Length: 396
Image (tube, rainbow, N blue to C red; front, side, top):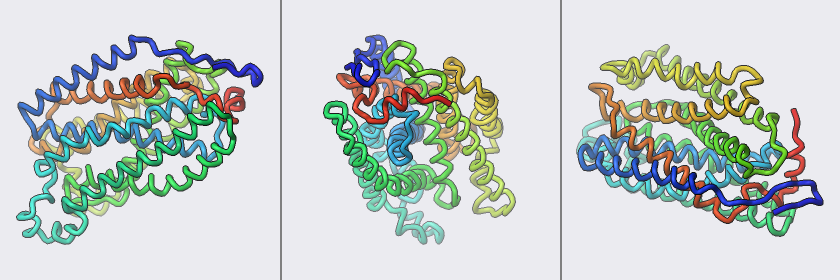
């Protein structure tokens, strides 16, 4: 649609069929490999399924967080492409399906589900009021319902505003966002604890939820940045998006790369300094039997490369550099989640092969297809938002 009276040039057009074809190809290859993995090594496949679940949760919940953050902060620079972020937040609808295979193999993943072992373990017995299957199930269902509820409320008002141009809808979304933020903080923290930290129920960390939050923000930002740059290059977005808009995305990526490194190092330093056996064993299992090189690689892949890749101001404004680094950070987030989860499965040796590659392909295929499905017959720009013109005119 076009709004000439406000000097906004935007015409909605359908995505190229190639996008759907790429998504279907990645999804089909990934699904075939994932099924084969479950048939050959179901426990290993379940752990990788958990990696996939936490990756998609990062993108979906992180995107919804940014939608709410824009409304609360009154930001204008992100308004021209907020709809892109809204579409990726729809990943939340896929999470229950991805979680089912993990839940059905819960006894192979989580030691605390074995009541005979819990009863003989003082530490686990003291945590049994929280770590038990019925309460775990209730939390999962409750989290899914809360996320989908807030997604539906925020995106419904945003799309409705395209048609009626009512500024009161923005005020409604600000109020909804204010209510959502405490729920976001709690659910993202307890999701990290429930799905990942409880894999090693004797271990504990007071900042593990913040650690996962930092990766969640990076994943959501990276997916959105990739889509925004590609869509803008191919004329799908509103005219007027320039390097100044890209800079804000690059600056946020750079900021949260540093934040992730700070939290990761803080967690390690405190545990190393205290040197308590009930804490250090978690890091030792990620340092021995071949995992040492993977752990060292995490610092390079997840921090040093993106840090220097986005350090200068021009690099944050260069769409090609920003596109490459966003894809890199997405892969690095997969790397990070693999490092967090898989050593519980394979304490004896480092494992990586065709199974892991299949789940990675499946994850990216799901994201592409989600964008194709949820963008169909919708504006890719929130044309009714009163901040849109100011967002297009944003300059550093």
